[in-house]
Length: 288
Image (cartoon, rainbow, N blue to C red; front, side):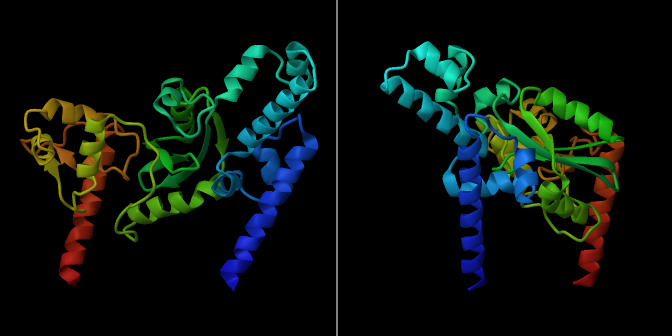
């Protein structure tokens, strides 16, 4: 009964958002404006709307605009007049929007996230400042630094063309899970991811996620585990390109001589992480 009531509330919310977007058409509304109007986190609004309709609110507005344009042309309006009447501004905007991709395609990533919306949260954690960024599909970036400014600058550089919205409430569930993990309350970080990677990188990252807490592996051991023992250097490069600290635990990779090696987010953080996880493992072994 409770679930049916929640589903009804979601359906009513989606209907209200659609009605509002139709009302203000051809003007569109930002996710922040919609979140404020309907009293919901922009992140949750985007996820809920897309789960129900298959597209984002912005894509819904563009769909209304494109349908309006086609209707005007069918009624005899000149194409150039119809383009300006529905608010495209130029013919290039029409063709750009009429075949828009959904989600983070490789081309979208290469173009620094053009057409995407990235939600992010920054919180303090035992290792400094923590940034978690996500699309409506899942986490696309987790990074660590000494300050929030450094994290924001890094996000801005990587996704310069994306719409970037800070939404501590919406992304909060995932940041809380990561903080709980760092503090020893969360045993693992099996969180949804939305990452662009080569097939080789996926193999490496999946293997990293199999390393138990409190244990380490060498680059050569990972290379052997994925069936490519000669690809040690490539494994090291895949670890260095890991975009999701902690969720993909590249800090558990060390050199063959047992030295720590490098770490994208600072060698001292790597050392601290391994010491924490070793202590957690020992405590768990003693308690069993």
